[in-house]
Image (cartoon, rainbow, N blue to C red; front, top):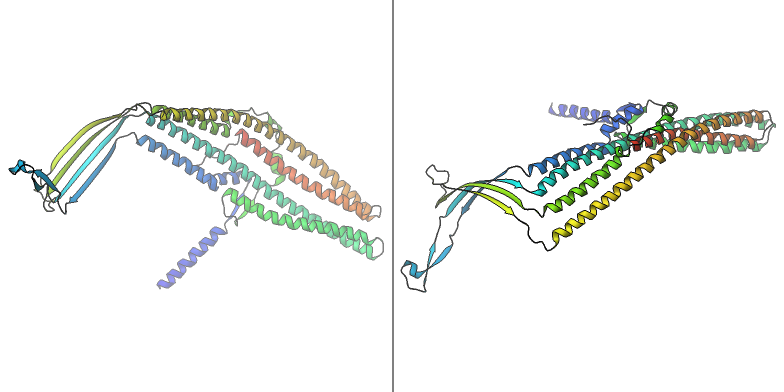
Length: 452
């Protein structure tokens, strides 16, 4: 019976594991982004960094609060030490020594000490540094969320692009197969040359190669999306949005008129955090010129015995207590403190220079992203027109070829031009989506879902 329960349990666990692995997901782009903000591996660790920063802040705060430590000791003097006393002290001859032993064989002591920091400049700076570190961790988490969002958009769009390319290559292959069958029939009846068949066969081989490559690319693109959103790379994920609708949703020229707020850029905020940290490091070095003051109070009790009688009610315990204040006053460091202070000052100047550079770089990134987004929209519109023209040209050459008014070479050129225009059109659609995501990232405009 026990074996039967074990077998049933094993089957249940195995089926549960397979169910987890075979779980199917369905996402719109927005749903995929929100899911990734919770499940992406980098985003998870970024939230842990914030939690760690909160604990570090409390660690710094607690170091200046009262600290109590207790100690218990037990000694068994296997052989008591011998002390030599001058002989004249006990009635002996001068110049002689009498060996004596002091103490009991066993002794124990119990004590507790309370310490309190009264003043330490480094502690005050440490509190400020802990707060700054928490702000840095929060900004780093914001940057991770922005990068995760952008990564999911790119991966999601890449899957849609690969699906579109597979579909269009399959359609082109089907049309070519029909043309090839018809052309072979015409050739066999002596109404066209063999070269016409061969030209179509060359085009067919190219299409088949591109189709195989697109199918392989689609598999990798799906796995990259799974990794970006934080699910098993082998999981089945269905995309509910299509490339055409996403492209139209992301065409918004008014977005280019967004006011530039460089101070709101996450990279600039992180650079500001670094500058503030360097300022605090300079303050910290200066605090080492100041004295620090602390107080303590100790209470203890001690018992001695020739045998282990410390748990007996009649054991005598001797109590003691002490209250003290300690001040450490720095006087001369032979230039050590000054050298460290100057190093911290130079590090602060470097951070301020880096902050200025970051300001200019962010401004450049915003202008570059705006230019890339504008170009992507223009390129999309141009490729859309180019695709329409290529389709008409290919259709005309198809009719001419059927009627014997165009050569197979002319038809192949028109087909290649069409296939190139198709691929360029789909890639231009993806480019609109990704450049919009780049611009939103550098402007910190997306409204990201709050995560815990």
